[in-house]
Amino acid sequence: MNTILLDYQPKPRQHLYCRSSIQVLYTTAWTTPMEDAWKLNSAACGPNELRHGGAGNVLREHHRLFKAARAEPLPNDFGHFDVILVALELGLREAIAQGIDYLEVEGHNVHAIAVVFDDKATLTPSKSSIAHKCRKLVRAFKCVKFHPVTEFANRAAIKLAEMATDEAGMQHWIIQPPPEIATILIEDMTGYWHGLF
Image (cartoon, rainbow, N blue to C red; front, side, top):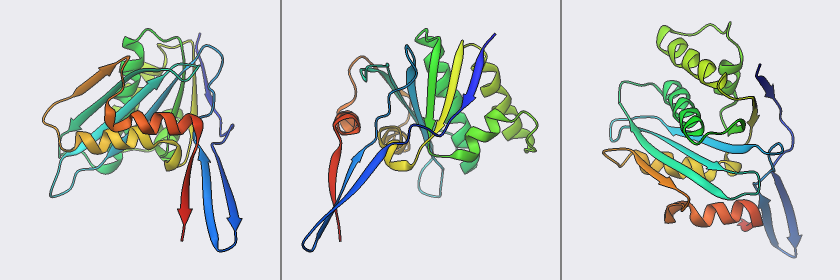
């Protein structure tokens, strides 16, 4: 028997600091998942006239260590919402391949997470098929927590999805993250400053 949860807590943190005429925002994106759980961040870029779609997924374990990532181009016949669901499906498949029992899924598209959660949602046949695949994959875990987050807490997966739009084939990393997201992963944990103008 598996458990599926939807939870909006804990929230990634942003703090605004003002001094004189300078305003800066300090952001900490990492939130610790359930005990013994790995965290999957998933994102997608929709296709347009200039590029195909892309899916990006990052897996980290409970103590923040990078475990795996993938950036995968997606066909142009997918709509924007379809690519979000396909990205989630690919991320769930990667988590299963890594042998994870407890998983926390973070994404910045609340509607896609809700569709996977609600098996009675009214969807087009193509979206319904992908959502059904995701629901079936979720059953492979002992416990899955879906955790909607804002885009600033999903930057690494978004970067991989953007990278995938320029690739001809899937890229896969194990243990060592690609340099394009290494700084983002560190900043997720330690926090980062950025100015507001």
